[in-house]
Every structure is written in structure tokens, then in C-alpha cells.
Length: 314
Image (cartoon, rainbow, N blue to C red; front, side, top):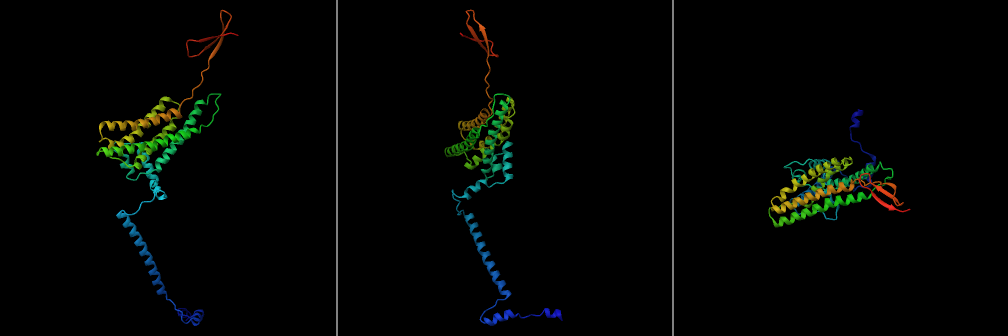
């Protein structure tokens, strides 16, 4: 009996009092509430679906406006890459293979500025720090040497690297655009793709600049030649399909200028940041007596066979 009483419907006194106080009030059942909730969810879903369909329609029709130049979304597309893509592009720049175009096989219509920016920044600090360490190691044995950090090398390295990675691709892109208008056979990449190729091509100089600390002249020049060969191969394999259909003179001129500027950057960095210090060679002096009574000061260099004599009267 107790279980059957619990299963029966009971009237609550508070609800009865509220209904008695407001006889005109209406009540809603659970089924009505569920129907109202279903209608609200359905209407919101319809609105979201209409918004998605409108976005798809704009994308398919090409009517969606691109982000403004002054907005963050405009520059966000330049850094829309992940770590695996950046590492794959760095590997492609370190090991260029014949027949593999860097733009077609690695960029794949998705160039970025994230990798080139950090490669150039890392190279700037690597050159400056390695140059300071090289100067310290070369002069460490000199007793009169007092080490002072050369912070101006960071500025010089930054100006050299960023100007090369920005101005040279801009000039090459402008040249290809001009030749494209003159000769119909010449093609061209976008400016972003050209800058991206140049930025990734500098990645090989980062380990090379660290290995330049080894104080062996022939090894340093061998590392320079290796880095220039690998880095220059990336540029040649990438831009050769664009300029080979041009006239012979224009093709040779463009290819020579590209490789010459690339070699000038490498050799210039080596000669400036890793130059050996020049030491003052001491002169050995000796006093001799002249036949006329004058005292002569003889200054001789240890590596010279002849000596210079200067008569000094005391």
C-alpha cells in the first residue's frame, strides 16, 4: 500500500494557493515547453545555416572582400604555416635536388614569411656572436688584449642580411615582371614566393657561420664554397625554368647577377666578421758606433734581410 500511495498524483498546497490568487493565469505543460525549446533551437540552427551558406556563396562567387591592408587578418595569411611545413622547407633548402623546384615541391602555393623572418634573424645573431667569439679567440693569447663586446656587428649583420633578403628578391621580381611583358615566354613568381625562396636559401649559412669559428683558413673557405653551392643551387633550380626561355644574353646576365650577389654576401660576411687581427711587429733596435763618433740607431725586422740605419746624434 505504501508503494501504491507514492505512485499516485498529489496536489501541492502552494500551487493551489497561487492558482486561487490568480485565476486568470495560464500554465504550460512539459510538452509545450519542449516544443518551444525545439522551435528556438531550430530557428537558431536555420540562421547559422543561412550564414554558412552565404559565406560559401561569397567564396564560390569570388565576391567576398579580402581583408584590408591595415588589419591583422591581412598579415595573418603570411604566417599561416605549422612547424612541420617550415622544417620540410628548411630540409629542401639544405639538400637541393635536380628536378625539384622549391616553389612547386615545397611552397605549393602557400608561401610564408614566418620561416624567412626567423632564418634571417637567427643568421644575424649567429654572425654577430660568432664574429665576437672569433675575435676573442684570436687575441686571447695577447697579453695587452682587453676584450670588449662589439655590439655594432649586430647592426651591421642585420642591415646586410635583411637588405639582401628583401631588396634583392624585390629587384629580381621586378625584372621578371618587366621581361614577362617584353617576352611572352618568360614567367614569374609572386613577390611573396620570391622573398620566401631567398629567405629559406640562407638557412645553410647558419651552421656554416658557427663552423667558421674553427681557426683553419682552408677549412673556412671550404665551408664557404659548400654553403654557396648549396644555397645557390636552390636559387638556380627555382628560377632557371623562368628565365631559360628568354634570350641567351638576358638569361646569362640574370643568372650571373643572382649568383654574384649571393657569393658577395657570403664572402663579405666571412671577411668582415671573421677577419684576423693585425698585430704590430716589434722592431729590434741596436746602438752602434759610427766612425766619426756619432751614435747610430739600427732598426731591423726579424723577417727582413736588410736593416735600416738612422744616424742620431746625442
